Image (cartoon, rainbow, N blue to C red; front, top):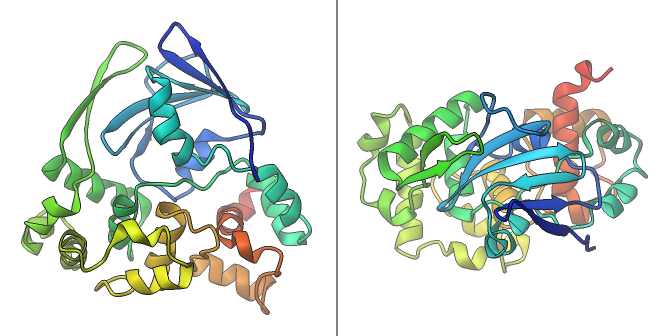
Amino acid sequence: MFAKVGLSFENSKDLIVKLPYSFSLKETLECGQCFRWKACQDVVLKGTDSYSGIVGDSFIVITQRDENTLVFHDTELPSFNELWKTYFDFERDYESLKNIFTRDPFLSKAIEFCGKIRVLRQPGWETLCSYIISQNNNIPRIKSLINKMCASFGNLLKIKRPDGICDEGHSFPEPGVLARLSASDLERLGFGYRASYVINAAQAVANGGVNLDSIAEMPVNEARAELLKLTGVGPKVADCSLLYGFGKVEAFPVDTWIKTVMTEFYPFGLPEFVKPYAGIAQIYLFHYIRNRDNSI
């Protein structure tokens, strides 16, 4: 399933991305699948929402002008093609998928409520590490811990925003960097028991005990088993990592919200026609069930 994205430049440096479908930058970045984006609330731009974020060593500001148009500020075409197109999964035909999903009554309601969300394809190590940190945590605290870790052990990056203000941030620390630390280095940042899990995972990845490069190519069950080798990685963390970091759209993370959905609406499991893209269905179900009372 393939969707064609239109590209053009404005002012020679801002890349205009025209999407053949409706998309919500705000909902996609704030639905709980990622932790390193922030709204540019102090920036007055021609658009509905603007966010700054860091992926790898790329620091960017993106503005949404309408439901089909995004502006990637100060972005070159190779950067978009090599990073952002994949990161936002822009070329997957979500409209065809949603047409399939709407054969199920509850999924149809979820899509009506939040069908403009897309599943991100984040860097594998960052996703795995972030979801280890996420255990028994709320989103503001997850973001705070990740930001502290990046500021302490990542590389300094700078960006000039569209309003001319210079902003600073830090890259996500590579496994080899964290592998040289002790758990106490992260405990001082407030990681608690998660500190040893992060250090152990970083060491396993850095020394080749777990090969993240091969996980994207593995069948999902083999990939899950590989991640479950890591101390502190259970089924939920493994499936979140596979879905959001390794492109395994059949992975189906189950937390308390999804347990509620499955008990109430799918006691015999998801419909067979949903299962090949269960992870994409999951993000609609998750966002809808959390906000259902506010959607009426």
